[in-house]
Image (cartoon, rainbow, N blue to C red):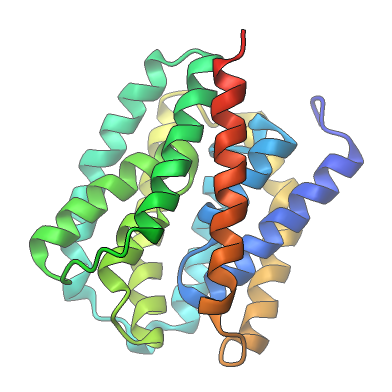
Length: 242
């Protein structure tokens, strides 16, 4: 498919399996972990194909966690996401391929820094609106929209986190997919790559269902952030090279 070999597609499915598995455990992860790895396999895999897989994954996780959903807390973040998504589409419209690599890497590193900064903002309307805007912007360009939202949910209980973050990411991923489609960043090639990544997404979701109460996500967090940081630095360097 295009210039992707069978080995590349296999590695891409392993990367998206890991992200889908982590998102099934913690409510986010497919962007933070999978996007940097997929970018290293091929820039063609982000953001479109990954965003499409994220839409499907969040539908599945939300259905599994639906009894814990508290929609009132999510609506402000959704409003912010709309603004962030529109700004991201405007940014993509003026980026060159080198510019995309550079901003992709910078936004990945910002996501990592947000995750390790130790900030503990309260879960309220204002912070939800700001986090939603940041998530929409980052998620549309890089498919990494998790860190801003994760900041405001870090002190909540696991089932609520998975349900509410899945509701937000379903809205955010769908909004990003629609925006990318109408701006020309999702076409036949991206739909084909979405289908090629589908096995990894589904297997990751199914695996998370068996281990959701057994694997401590906190223990995996340093590894996730380390991988994301290395990939982000790689993308920045690639974007700066002539």
